Image 1 (cartoon, one colour):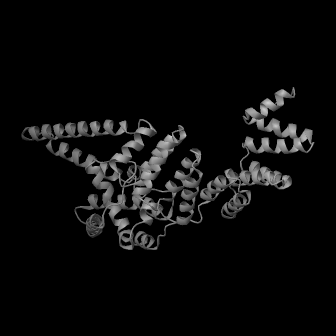
Image 2 (image 1 turned 180 degrees about the vertical axis):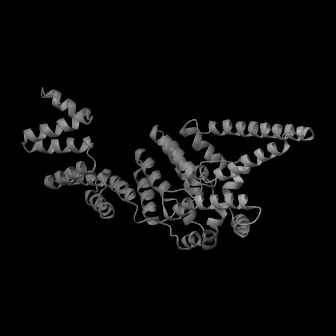
Image 3 (image 1 turned 45 degrees about the horizontal axis):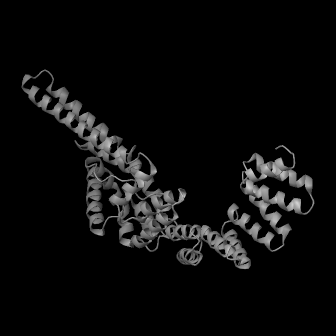
Length: 374
């Protein structure tokens, strides 16, 4: 518990999930204790379940943290008393849920809360409930006067199972496909930008860049500091040919996070399309200075070098791209084109064949036109 609180106090934006990074110092300190009670409450009241949960208010966190602290203290104090089983169930849950708390505090990609985190830790509560039912049944066995109580208990359990079954079927509906899921998230948690951002990504994959741009703008409206949405907006605007707006969106992303590699590469693509080769090359190099394994940045830098007449540098970039991403057909295709221009026929054919085997239709056509197989 103490370790979790210390981690919360020392968490920074680059090390934690975004929802935690945006919390105040006080809220971060409450996060571990709040989380301890969050899952039992969802277990007892399984309503409003969503793939992504919005951070609660400081008041709610304070109340939950106080109850969780009291429950933990009571469990420790009652360890040797008649409530040993209750204490053991709660403490088992606390120990098992702790890794997810620490993980959320230390990992950028990990959600602060997710229902799946509680699947194993809450098993102690189910065992406790099963033991309670068994105890009731055993005590009432053989006693006619307890028959009505047993029937009532059985009926209650059946009703409970029916309600939970209904809620489960209803919940599964939201997971039918990605589109349904993210639309549900935007409805249930409209104050979270991720739902709008991810739904925008689905539209972009389908080629609806106009619709995607509107959703990215909505995500930014919800959270102006959501870096991914700024960059994704730039990508959608770039696809729509609105280069000035795309450039502004990517620059906004970099203003929020100067280490965001994809934003440097995306902005470089905008400058490249506008003919600013020097500016584009500078951005690709800045991306590589932050991520030396960015195949995308190496490939695009190779394109710039080729356009500047620096073929050796271009080849070096394409080779580097292929070493990082062995199935990058475009890198082999580009190498083949340069070798062909410089009269290195055998090397060009070898590169084209490699690209063709990786699925490049253009490389296959070039080889076919020359009467060659791949």
